[in-house]
Length: 409
Image (cartoon, rainbow, N blue to C red; front, side, top):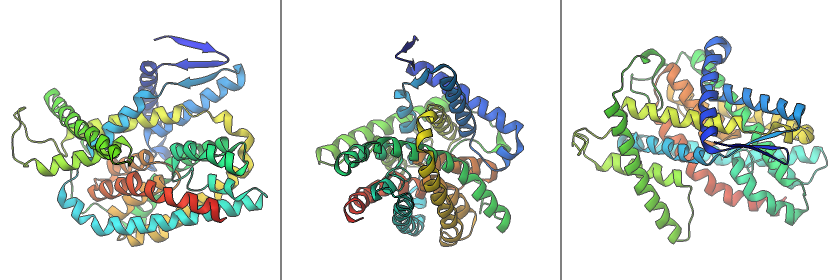
């Protein structure tokens, strides 16, 4: 558990990174409890704490010149845990009922991705910048997130002579993540209050425990049973992932683990008792609790580790680009996604998730929906179709759109 400072960088190892992530999550909860605006607009607790600490680390850098860097290896494990719980909570009935809404949301998202790229290119032209800079402020970094930005920036820098492509991509992805984290809850609250929406029926949460049932007890065997089911699903997910790689394809591990959870949940008879003497723990409070722990800690670690000071020099064009992207994302959410998804409570929760998709990342979308669902009620449909759209289909579409826009504009 050593802290080392070398060349002006304070390096923090995985154990302390996770510990600090948990502390950040608690501080975010305390702030949300104390500030009504944060709670009423369903701002996720890890977002509140994570942004606060990223600002504090920025101040430390400004005063001392020491940059804080975290080893985030454990963060990726938490992401796999989280999406595996989502798969375990997915029933075949919900998947079938989500068929048409899934297609509708996918079509809207693809259309929005095209608009997002045109928006970025248009703003870049206003600043007399190459169109590829606008693409870096489009689906490369926003819907694509940090991973896509890091993957494409070297090629854009080399092929189109944009030396700071990596900095532009990371800056856009970072500020987009912040806007996405702050967008989903307020949009859902606006829609729910304006249309007086309520869940069609009271159901257990997919992530976390409802605010009205915080006293619900969970035994240690319930917790271990859920962990065992998650590990069984992850083992199958890893095997699926390796099999797909043998075919020459690549998918993120959390996607195959999500599918493994879906397979086991729908293949194991609902009333069959396992060696544990219990039924498969789909949609049990322990599973929802683990999902909340994994997602909250993941997002807290992601946001607290942002190095905001690296983005100052690029503020002008990037802020203009993101401002335009933000306005378009809000308009698409309210005037297209909500009506197309049925103008009901599920549609409002989907909109909170689309806020995370449009400018942020899959975990941001899930955190937005989790905050809304824990406040207003569960929405299984939203927790099925949103991760399938943003964790699977978006990457495939983006892989085709990015080279098309790079060579055509």
